[in-house]
Length: 368
Image (cartoon, rainbow, N blue to C red; front, side, top):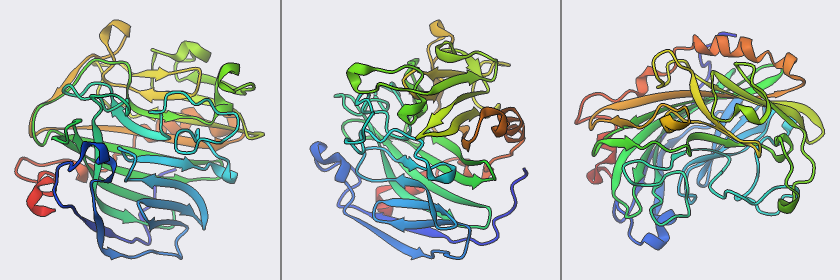
């Protein structure tokens, strides 16, 4: 289905005010910003898709029903959690944002909903939140939101900082939310900007865009972690199934089965324009316990593309789609959906021109 234009829209522009741009206290790095002042908030309530701002979050709803929440403060990185599929089923693990959900393994606390990060970027760890060298991705501002009859959009600016609070680079990310009769989907376009220095994405398996699924979609149980029954299966675009999808190249990965008693699934697409070796498909870090991540910087020795450097003043664009469907895999028509997605031109307005310019101007302390 070819996307239609936004028929109704609302725009949200915010300025972030802080006592200083850097981290005032490393032990309070999640509370750097003291005030979030919005110049204009216009919430469209008669649209099918709506983006509503609440404290520290943006919520997307479809005809009044909850779809997803974009959390942009207090977690050390912006994440999407929770996300509800068609019929309102929960599709992500709750932990660690919520710790008392029955049947969930309390492992890998850095797997937070739908998240972005990498184990090594110029010496800082943006995948594991709990280590001494862990960096943080700090939300700077909401550039734009749109509500509409057939989709919604959120666009933000974020600063990538090392563990001492030094800004290394930035990203502008555009999230587009849509739906049809059997699925809801989220498109992510992230533009990584080397605003302050060269950004070296080192060769690690832990990266880059990840999602931790509902525990029902795990492929294997873990009694010692409290997960006794699972109902998941997995397959990629090349026909590889089960645990064997880890470390393989593919256009997409699809986990499916029964979630909360209903037939459903999650498909994760990597756009064919994404960074890979010439002619190769994307490399996947997809585990039997429910982590699915696409990583363009995985080590060559495990079949990945290796390290990559974004030179200062340059940008790298990566695009992904997440499809949350009801019903059996045949009803979701994943192959057809990917073929349409592969033709989608994306949002080229997010690309950064030469310095000084966007988004460097936004990152300047004088604009805070």
